Amino acid sequence: GVPSAAAQSLAQVRPRPEPAAGDRPEASAAAQPRTFAELVALAAARREALLAARLANDVHLVHYEIGRIEFRPRPEAPGDLAPQLIRLLREWTGRPWAVTISNEAGLPTLREQEAEREARWREDALANPLVQAIVAAFPGATIGLVRDLAETGDEAGEGEEFGLLGAEDE
View 1: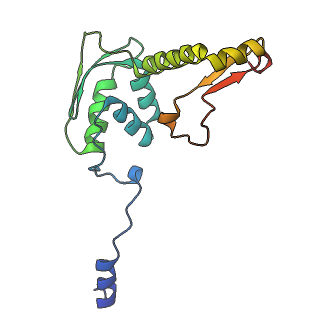
View 2 (view 1 turned 120 degrees about the vertical axis):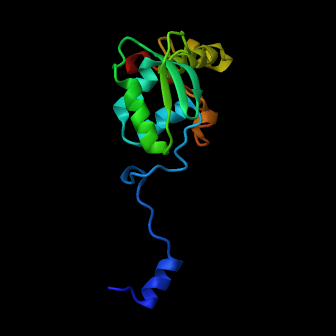
């Protein structure tokens, strides 16, 4: 039947609960990835872990802008990566996307970029006089974890920039 006046006024005052992002088929205005890394994060958030992993590991980005991606896939990448990405991005963002395969070299994959960043941090850690003193004081100690506290927002870990492992911990 017809809702009562009280139910109608409640509906006007109290907004309907928003369905979870993965539960709603329509696109979200917030789901407009501005960078390739945001696109990979969106795929992971939409429970497309395999796609997110493929994008991070097998894609050399040549060009990215909202609505248009150009990349060179590694030989290990599945052949349907571009069509799958076109379909899912349209579903997630509510707009058409052009996804083009390129022969240009492109950037290192996101995974390669992360490995390069971690290698630089490890080198910087090894150059730190405090770390050098610790390694000298504890023969066999190695650097186990290096992270950027500014990126992680880890305030409690200040002063714990370098994780040292004893030889037996490896």
